Every structure is written in structure tokens, then in C-alpha cells.
Amino acid sequence: MNHSPAEALLYHLVNRYLRQLMPAEYLAELQDRFTSAEQQVKDHPETLAWSQRVLWLSHWEGVLSSNPQPDAIVATLSTALLNNKKVTLRYQGNDKAFQFNLFGLIKRDQNLLVVGSYWQYNDPFVLAVRKIEDISLTDYPAVQPEPDFNVTDFMYRQLNFHHAQEKLDCLHIEFSEELYSYVQNHLPEADKIEMIAPTDYHHDDYFLLKAQGVFDGERLRQWISGFGHKAQVLKPDDLRLVMEQWRLDTRLNLLNATESKRCLNREIQRCLRNNQMSFGLLTLDLDHFKQVNDGNGHDFGDKVLLEVANCIRIYDEAARDGGEEFSILLPDTNAAEALKVAERIRDAIEKLQLVNDDGNVVSVTASIGLSIYPDDLPDELKTRIEQGDEIAQLSQSIADAIFHQADQALYQAKEQGRNRVCRAGNGLGE
Image 1 (cartoon, rainbow, N blue to C red):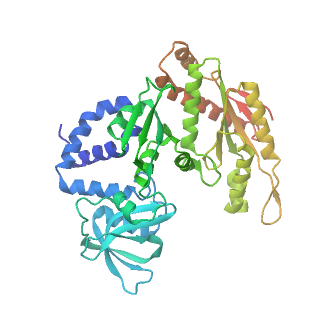
Image 2: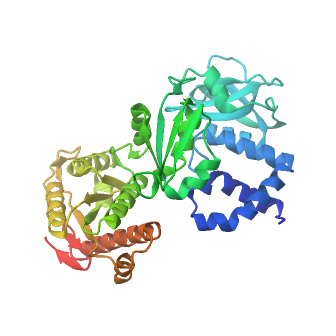
Image 3: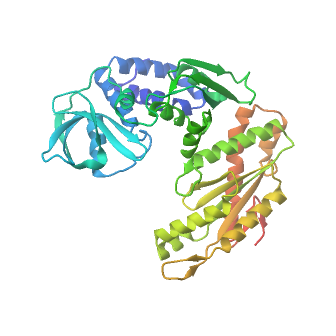
């Protein structure tokens, strides 16, 4: 199977960065195209070199997300790396500008770093982006590093990471079953690795990777985070806590949207295995929040969001889905209990005493939508559950449906005058 150069590059990038996110049936259909594209890229040195630069760029923040600091310096560095061009820069403490070859971009904690070499040399070292005072792109091709150069290995050797060159004695990661084949073929480097297959693992629809002697560093953490909500570190505790922080909304310290979906999916699978169980899902949106922001300033708006977060923080699976939108998963809860929780949250938000910079109290209210599993599911899904369809096939359909129902109830609450709770198909409360 032959592709055009552009098609081969596209399939290559999808295979490298998106494979673990794709449904198994899509992977099976595309596998021949991936194989053919990988061979074409391998046989085309310029494309292969560009792909390697994309990989080095991914150490920055991930090529599929925006740059963490989208200013002119960062944009120029990224452009230079992808186009294999030198840059001319002035660095803090140096009187004269000099030419620099980029080998890779790194993010350590909140610090942005660039790896490269001076002039015509290829000996690598590190510069801090915050100390770059001026930069410009040149038309000169950059000097390439040694063929065996690896950004991650260089980080281990040169940067004083607190976990540099440390090996983990015991690493346990729980994965969603659909990733079993992919993980088998893309294992991290370790002294010893054991995989407990889904058929042998005590938690249905998941499998366990156990490893000894794995280097704890950026490569491992990027590998884990690349699986999103489909991977969960169980051991060691310090790494688990670090990875869990990545699943939080950093401004409000609630679950982020990705982790919220993981929790919802796991609760659905738990209920499918025990048909006596139910759960509730609340979706919450602040009323007229744009007016609050525009009339009182964004700093005050941030204060409002933080106070609202405090009203729902007591629920372990409270999440910020974006902007002023929140969701709360209520495991093992029926409709009456979920309604009481929703009303308690709505009332707490309404009673907030928020004072703006002018000393005036600004009132804030919220509209809340409620849906209950399995009562509020469409009849077609209820039938599939009764017929015992495969859990993996049902989970995503149920998640989409239950969230849609809660969202529709939220819109209903807005239409009925706001500052109220509505259940899917029914108006509830004032």
C-alpha cells in the first residue's frame, strides 16, 4: 500500500501520538496503513528527521496541546526546531548575541528549558527560556546532534531533577482493557516487567502492569500521562500523587474534565456488574456569570469560582468541566438522595456573601441538571443492559446518554428561570 508523502506523514503521526486513544476496531482497520506509512517515513531521511524533531518538541508540553507560554520567544524556538533552523539570541549575562542550534525543548516543573549547541558545535547544553532576552530566526540550517542523541537521556545526565537516575523498586499501573495490546508492544524500559491480563485481574475490564527497575523521569511520566484517564498509577504513592495532580484543575483543585469522565466510566462499569446499584450525575452552571465577570473584573470572577468550588468540594468526585461549568458524580445514590444534594449545593451557592472591590455584595446563583442511572437512560440502552451486552460496548454509550440527560435538565432549569434544580424530563425545586 503506497501513500503520498503527506499521507504517510499523517498516518505516522497518528500512529505515534494517537494510537492509544483509538478504539480497537479502528486500529485493526488502519494497521496495514500504519505499517506501510512507517516504512515510507523510514525510507525518507528528511521526513524521518522532521518526525524526530517533533518528538523532541513533545518534551515541551505535548505536541497535541498549546504551548504553556505562547509568547514570541517560545513560538520562535518551536518554529526553529521544527524547521531545523539556527536562532540568534541574547542570553542573560552575555553581552553579545550568538547563534544557537536547537536539539530539544523541555519543561521541568514550571521552568521551560531549551537544549542545543553553540555555533557549529554539537556539544549539547541547557539554557533557561526565561533568561533569553532576545531571539530571532535565521535562514541557516541548524547543526545536528550526534545520531544517538536522546533528549530524555541527556536530562537524566545533566539536569538536577530530584528523580534523576532513580529507579523505582515497585511500579504498578492499572490500564483499561482496551489498551492491552498496545501496552504489550510499547513497554517502558525496566529490569523486570509482569503484566496481569484482564482475564486474570481481579478488576473487570482492566489489567495491571507491574515493573521493577524503571527510571522515574519525564519519559515515564509522559508515557503514563499519554493514556489519559485510561491509566492509573497504584504504586508508588509519591508517583501516584504526582500523576493525580495532573488530573486536577489547578486553579480550583477539583477534578478536571478528563478525570471526571474516568470516574463516570468506572461507576458505570461497577453498576453494570451489579444491577442493584444506581448513581446520580449533577451538571451545574453559574447563572449570568459573564455579567458577573464583566461588571466586577476577572479577579472577582476567579474568587466566585473558588467559592463555588468550596461549596462542592466535599464531594469526592466533583469536577470542573470548563469555565463556570461543574459536574458532581454521586455514587450509590437514588433520585431522592441526589435531589437533596443538588438542592443543598444550590442553596449554599445562593447564600454566598461575595464582596467586590467597591464593597458591594454580589449575588450568585446556579442552575443544576440531574440525571439518574439507570432510570433516566433511553429505553434502547435499558434494553441492551437487560440483554447483557458487553460492558465495554455499553459503557461509553451510557456515559454519553447520562451526561446528555443531565445537560438537558440543566438547560430546562435555565429556561424555567434559573437558580433551580431540574431532573431529566421533570422540573424540580425552586
